Amino acid sequence: MASCAFARKLIGNMMKDKNNHQLKLEDKHVDMIERMIMGVDLDKELPDEVKGREFLYQIVSNSWNSLDVDKFDYLARDTFYMNNSASATFSIKRMLDLSRVIKGHICFKEKVADSLFSDIFVPRINLHRQIYGHRVAVSLDLMVGEMIEAFDHGQTNQELKISELFRFDDKKETLLDRDEEEFLKRYSRLIDQVLLADIRFAIGEEFEKAQRLLNRIYSRDLYKLAGCIPLVDLPEDKAECSQAVENKKKVLKGIFKNKGLDEQIILHVQKYNYGMGSKNPMEKVYCYAESNPSVYYPYDIENEQALFPSKFEKTVVNIFVRERKYLEKASSIILSKDVADKGFKGKVSPYKSPVADLH
Image (cartoon, rainbow, N blue to C red; front, side, top):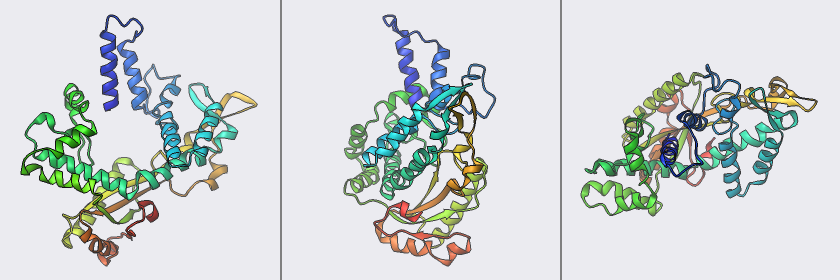
């Protein structure tokens, strides 16, 4: 959303520049660029300008089967910096070389389609489990979020408030939804140096909580992962699933509250999937044969069923404690009869192992 707002603003300024004779875009073109970035639900009724050109909306943000250049980019880049670059980079190049557009859809040659799941979707979930969902990365996210909210709580200057620029877990609306111009003005100022300087050098006891959190981050005194609780038997429907997760979180919060730890723990929901929620992304992959490259057909899921997992999404609640001294108590609650009696099966975290080891 923010990137689209900035792009629209920049393009708009360039279009107003009378000396810029090269950029000849109309509003409909800018709208199209935005839809390509944000993605279009190709399962729904398509507008006229999309019909027959669905492939344009499968390049940057592909809601159809999740194979898009955004994913290729971070797979190649992040696996490279994790010293595991060969398979992702090679398979992506090979896949692009053997893809073509047929009747509005991006399709893949038979021999490359067979390796899409292992070369693209499996590395994706592994990155989320081992890197993006690592206990330290999640802990820092939680601490930075609480630091920003604590800073804003003591802030009287509305223009310096930060939290309303972000969509935290329990907040559905941001400043962008209300005032795009003001959002762009304040968001463009938001760089690490400014943010950290604002917090570190703020004067007044109302900023002490934010400054304590910042000092803890600098000294690596991070929130600790006590363990996790997998959530099972969740509904397939997205809205119903979200509500079921919230209901299960309330039950767990109640257990920790009864044990006197409700102020010390954070329940962080984490989902791991292959890019299409609980669905198999290969269900919407189209193929073509070398002998007849003008005709496409769906990937043969049935004959390859043994290659796929039984479930394509896993949801867990990770339990973090704000203070290390509560780690043992929180761990004992996770394994307690109170938790088991509610239908949960908790796993305790060894102090130095990543979240991924629990899953």
